[in-house]
Amino acid sequence: MSGPRRAVVFDADETLVDLRPAVTGALAAVLEEMRRWTPAAAEVSLADLEADWGAVFGALSAAPVQEIRRAALARSLARAGLDAHLDEFAALFFARRFALTRPFPDALPALAALRPRHLLGFATNGNSRAERCGLAGEFTFELYAHENGLPKKPAPEFYAAVVAAAGIAAEHVVYVGDSPEHDVVAAQRAGLRAVWLNRGRLPRPPGLTPDAEVSTLAELPDVLGRLEPATA
Image 1 (cartoon, rainbow, N blue to C red):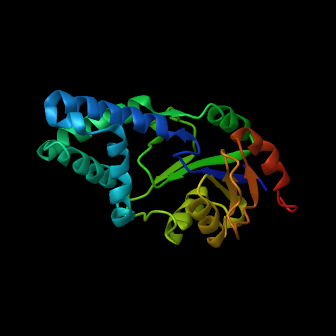
Image 2: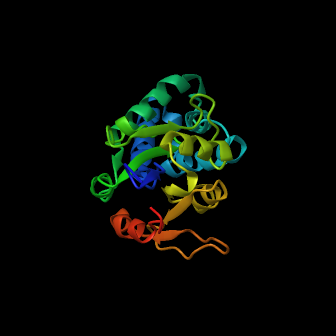
């Protein structure tokens, strides 16, 4: 088999991208600006802003992530009578969110170790674009849900697009991610192999059978070596 022996395709947020500090920092900037605009925001807390995401996510889970974030921000701004200024605050949020977004420390070394033998891809539901998250130029292909009609995970069409972009058979594509449902179960259902990144070393959910489980991306080269097809 010429070229890369398999494709290794990565989820973004909480897999390669350390999203939580960036989001927390962006929300803190929004809250600080809200308090500059009106005394009514003194009663609003960072916990309120964080909770507003969860309050809207369920009803909008199939929507683009940017739309969900704007809806959450609208809910937060309404707490202080600032909902008419959504565009200004959304611009502030996204500017800070991307300015603060970084890869996990294990991400770039793992990609460098894998690149000589594997084709590398990036495929995400979120809006963590590789070039805005310290990952520019790391991948052969990048796929983003809601671009060119691509539905979000766990839709099978998402994984069909991953396989098409990789240009090899599904069984030679490994998807790596932190979500048991989206990154393991859905990927396997579509014929891919799946590695569960379990950074917190959480108990494995009942019925979850990833092809491999790692707690850090540094383990990937060895794990993928053990997953090599006998006929490759």
